[in-house]
Image (cartoon, rainbow, N blue to C red; front, side):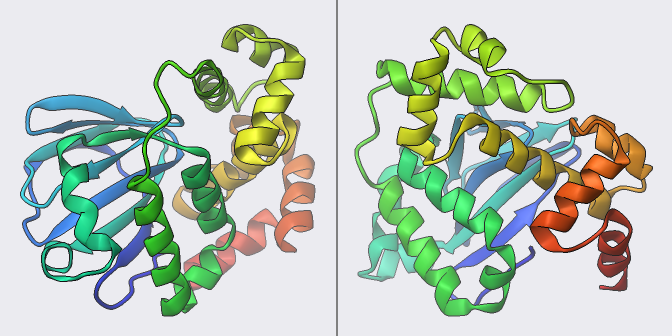
Length: 259
């Protein structure tokens, strides 16, 4: 998706490589949410990371640099600064966010992120839907954050991080629970409570999204993409892609190049 909508919001999925020089954007605030991979960011001298557990608000005028050396994808929302300063809408409350920069992904934000990833085509073609989604995101960001001492959120963040770092390898609930410091039963409960899904469904979604990104953005052989994203072979990837989007890896690449 590369969805750009008229004032006041601009929404896109972007990938980054290498290190970007120190720069700033005076005209808009930027909210970055993780889709896959991670990115180190330094804002006004303060460092942090956008990954499976948190996103970031880059305030208008804040000097920042970022680096991402592995395959990555992020959902980026730009909100013009003049909109935040002069409008009576929800965006006016962005200013309080500019001081904290990094924020934990609450269940509401995770649901919005999942929706945007799963409905990228609809967002790309509907200004009204994009604006509604953006307003919901801003509203969620303005809610009180879950305490960092909440053990459930910490366990879930560890689980999501472990899953993302091991998408290429076989994953079992036992291993994920052990590395997250919890039981398998509680892990299932946390995924249901905060993500409204199961660990296996979440893993399948991440693997397919990553495979689609690699098919669109690289020239890697399909069999290598299958192995990098945890599929046993090319046939397994083809079956998953066909079931979810009625496309084969080859047809997806052909369609991407045609655009």
